[in-house]
Image 1: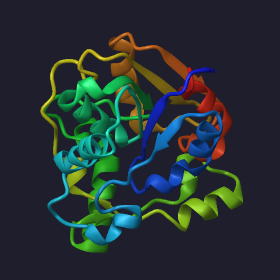
Image 2: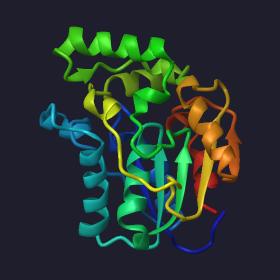
Image 3: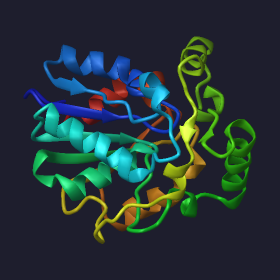
Length: 237
């Protein structure tokens, strides 16, 4: 692990918020690092801002503005799951503020391609149906924590009590990116293997094709809750 102070910006995935990083942020701060964990528009403590206008550009604006207004430089930018989209967006917009990118069991976007285009058709159909039934197509209700490989009852209750519906349009919109989703910045992939989260399979293959370093962790998709010490060690290099 690193002995120099670093700045970590931890970006959550779908249905989550900055709250999900509580354990990892505490560990990294105890090691002397600066840590922020912004919440994207419409989620977590910003759930009251849910709107049909929230797309991947809004999520990217959230992150870019966080980096600018918090005056963050030389950042280790971590994107969990759906957060892989916005960290790629930030890499395209403010690469000078980013030291390296960590795609943590994350989507690795392609220029002009919506996240749903990478998902199994059955998943897309089910999530679209859930959005229509629960909110007229505005948002997708959260799945149970068990869907993310969380087996400890206390952890599952904690996650289930905090997840909020996720804006559907972020899954059907796309970003303008170059051929490299990391925009030439150092990037790595962290894969949770116990169990594997099937919706990131295409992104994992993309990371391998790009030659990014790969680290595997023997826990489920929400490793920031189920294996915070191990995950912190992986980030803190």
